Image (cartoon, rainbow, N blue to C red; front, side, top):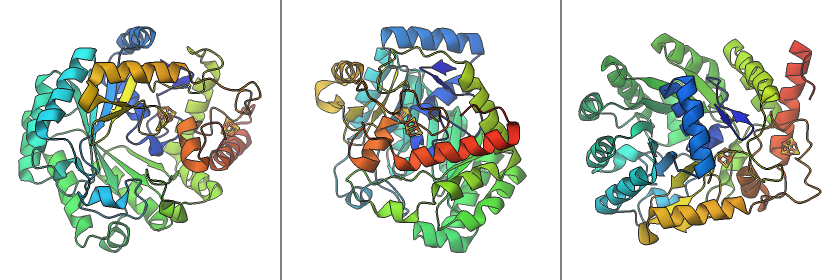
Length: 392
Ligand code: SF4
Ligand code: SF4
């Protein structure tokens, strides 16, 4: 799929490699690509792009979670339920409004979405609206009744985050005894039910020693596995997660340690070289955020993407359509300054360019992230050394 200047066509790379876009637009666009025939995707996306139809969204229906990972971007007080979240009635009303506005692909995420006692009601409601659904979960709450629900009302895919490959690593990362077994039981329940599952992991200083074992686990299950290491600060600015972040060099080393992943990177790179941009040259964002995709948080605030906090609307009170128009206008106005360093940067297709990420790093969408720059340089170096074709 061509969106802006990005191609979403590799299994483990995502959009510039960003699992940090784990609840972002790239995942939804990959979902569209997987779900449809290529020519249908092209037509759908061009139409959505041209007419600013919010064809793809993610909805964090809660920020609560049964795990308490230090690396998580959700602020601590939100995870424990001290912050109010939307009622079932408002969640389902928002789903109705999204569907009416043209949303076909919806990602339900959290926090841990299965923690909501009304999850089944929300899921069935979205299915009845005809949406193609993806679920992001840590897997530990996939009890028999959840597997039954998903068998009766199938997802397009369930993506489960792995936090390690042993009870010990899981305990260190998630703070929950028995989490590893619970997650594995959940994965196996879904696979036994014949449902499509993918695994992924956020690689940090706490679990990098388990990377190979996680890969082996995914391969034993016969499912896709992808990684990311680009941790970012919490939504309230708390920078605790960054203390667990691998250096860009370590992160790239992990990415290219696996043959499938390094092949994916090379393929992604060569595809990017051929793609024309559908956006004006001076657009700050070159993705689908606020153009054809969106993110809703547990309080009903609408954003162009989970990574973009500078433009928002209140979908819960003003309604989805009105908030969407606000988002579209805000993103349309986002232009680069004349001396924008990323504009002619040779690493742009490899660094995971995202002004939303810049904002989390530096407090400004206009200040490129040194972390991403180094990721790009390191990826470029390896591709150049191994293929000899990377002009960057
Ligand atoms: S804002 Fe960033 S994370 Fe979101 S879709 Fe765009 S590039 Fe991806
Ligand atoms: S300057 Fe850095 S962040 Fe900007 S495109 Fe280049 S490598 Fe990416």
